Length: 116
Image (cartoon, rainbow, N blue to C red):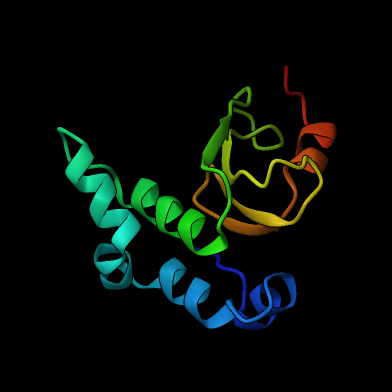
């Protein structure tokens, strides 16, 4: 898996780089996060680790939920999910369909790809 470095995360989200990196790389940290625990309690079936991880990241970033954009399945137009900042070009954490996590904005991804 590819994860943003602490330096990249710290530059984008001052004061939160170490915490975000730990959530990205450590399943135990995700399982112990209050937002992930609350998600598990709300669900009938246990959510996937990626869903729990994005929920925990959303809580740490204090964004407005996790959103999904469907691609057409090609390498250049992958589906992805992101922590919603309510601004198309604001910096956030994005999880690509391939499992790669990125720091960026979802607006640029949609402009470059073949999204509907």
